[in-house]
Image 1 (tube, rainbow, N blue to C red):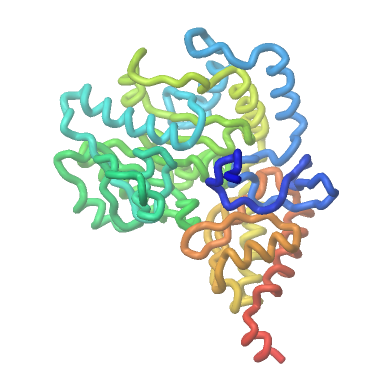
Image 2 (cartoon, one colour):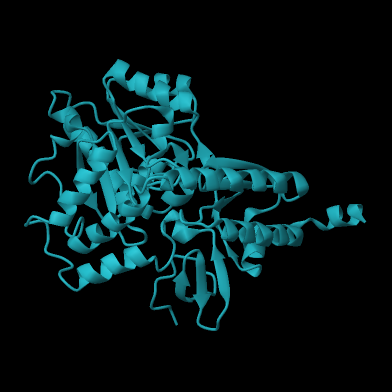
Length: 398
């Protein structure tokens, strides 16, 4: 019989009943240390008391009213994000793909309303991932994701990640902007060099283009700053956010300068659920934690310590691991054996991780990860690595 729940995921045979901090528990009492955080989404871990209390309190009052009316929680959240970032205005939606779609629409609209309607194309990058809608699949450009869905949506040109010569060669009379992830998550936790992000900003200024950053995965504190681009010292025109923005509650956002935002007037864009009272209560609670003095510095320090421990592990087991990538608590462990084998071995050791492109194991724990949980995660990862040492290497060691 065909499953009632569409089989769009190859799900592990695990069902979690409850969670606490960085831990998830099954109904039969098994405990798993969560170094995946719902794919970098459960930013405050599980059952965080401040987040759960905010959601429960708001749910008891009003969950949804639609954007036909003012939503004070959304107004407060937008102002807090504006105060903490480059942005002048914020649009709330439901997911990263929706935020990226809206960001591209915003760029196109701004060009059309400034007498440049022929400029609609976005330069994107090989190895990117921008979402699963038809347009964002085309922006992603991965043939595996595009197969079977008909013609690509027009308007996206792809160049090698990090190659500024290729970017400049791709700029043409129809180019409107550049869409880039400061750190490619699905693409293998590949961080753009800071000079590359600065060069992209300079090229956009030179040619009159907009710089749109996809920080769906690397934003909201994941790298030790509120947004990853801050570490390059650049000011983008727009940034998309989602995943960790509401700690696991579905939400996305577009942060933009007035130069872009002023072109989305009533009727030009919209969303039914986006920015509703319940979502904004969750996001405001997350922001309470992220903006607590010293919290982001702690994320950066915990990430640096974990990165150092993982580097030691690479040196200890070169038959299994080849390198470490990433920033803050967005880390990629490059594997010398199939990353899916390592992921399975981690699962056997009660450690949840996420696979990524380029044979990388993604380590994206909650931002509230404790020092003790980080140490326990490393211990489990070491045991998992021993499970993955190739037979010939074991024989040689004997």
